[in-house]
Image (cartoon, rainbow over all chains, first blue to last red; front, top):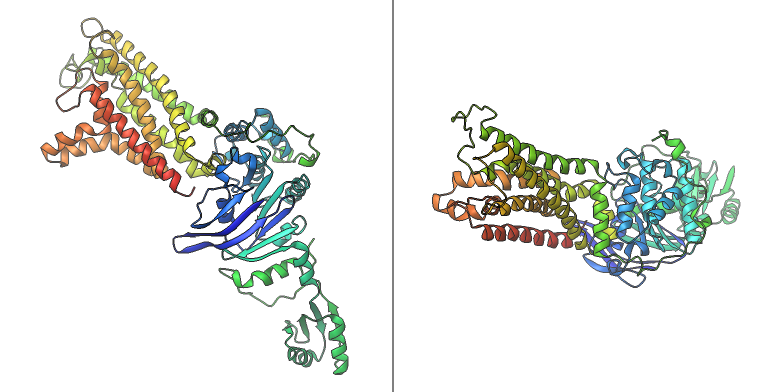
Length: 314
Length: 293
């Protein structure tokens, strides 16, 4: 259990984390989501004591991280993959870290095997690809068999096979009853594995919800309508305070907050012809973007209107 | 290494953590971080970077080779363009100092090695893995000091003795001295310890500045440039007051047999030199605790 209590951190003028409070529950994968620069890495660094909070505190199983006898046996962390001496072999890198807490050479070989680096164990870590470095970082996190794991953007730089492997690993670790806290700026990366979500933007908490709620909350609302009288329908429904978006096509609108049955009935009552009436499952990605829209530091402006082909997150 | 293609080593073990045979899980107290374990970790780090092992060996060999060369020049075996034919530039100096003249060069190598041993971790990010494992942090600083000082002490005392013996052999009867002569053993062992101390100075400066290039510049300037600069720019009486207390001058006080008016006595020199290390390490310790990693 990680308890984050009114945590704040600024670097000079820049506020990285702003009065953040949430908990990471044991035994599940908790996704830590937010746009780039939202403060995810800073929060993770504060959990393991690399950065000192300006105010507030973080405890891991009731104590500050540094107060544990064997810190990496409590929390294993992958924060940056390339944080190794380039001339040191992968095996020696892990042995050096493990030696601080009495991890045996046998265990080092075990985790190297687990991440598929046995054949490269003697090679200079500096020659590793990003994917291999990422695996070495994961091996380092698992080294002392911790109950809590922090992964900062673990699938960065991995090929599709590697991404699947990481997802499987995260699920397995949680199934063993471990606490897994994994950050990402892409919700689709977490959709399959995370049960719980902590969403932040600009260093502040936006939502702390179960994944199912984000999905379900989003799913009911959107209705895609194509009609030659789309403008008339938009005006009718918009007057009731329901959000209506006009698409690139003038005869296409997207209605959020009403069921398709209600929309159909209203259209019939007003004598509006409908060519298409489709309830949309808004993708997780869209739901996530709707939540964080106001919290993006440097938003990109859409270059062209995009048609929203919705895919439910895999 | 037979394996070259990434794909052949890049396939993770399909056996996931969940299917691993249950392992007796070690308890926190069995895995407690101790100073001894952190020293073990730093020892693995030190010997697993080949360029550092090579630098250490080169430092020792240069110490010996430079002493031998200086002794050859002083004995007249090697002609030089110096002003005193037959005697060379070292003719007037003390035979112990001649055989230990490699110290000047060797101190730069061990100083740089000390800097790299810690600044490198900041440069490549390893320091964050290190401090995650040892969040109290100071055991890491002490372990680096112990590992580097320990290795260099052994290596440099041996190199100092070898330089001395080889140098005296080259200088030959009449021009040479023995370890039994007054102050000689102290100067020879002192040189080895001084070099180990410069390694520690490098660690402290590296920890304070965290930047490799900056820290190396400071170490080189402290050892070579500042003493000369003090002589040039400071008023005479300031210079004679301050200069003996610089680390390099304090070192000369206990690494030379003859001593001089401009130097402290051997014991006072050693105390001042150790004082520098203590102050720099204390500063490094405070900064390491205070700063974000």
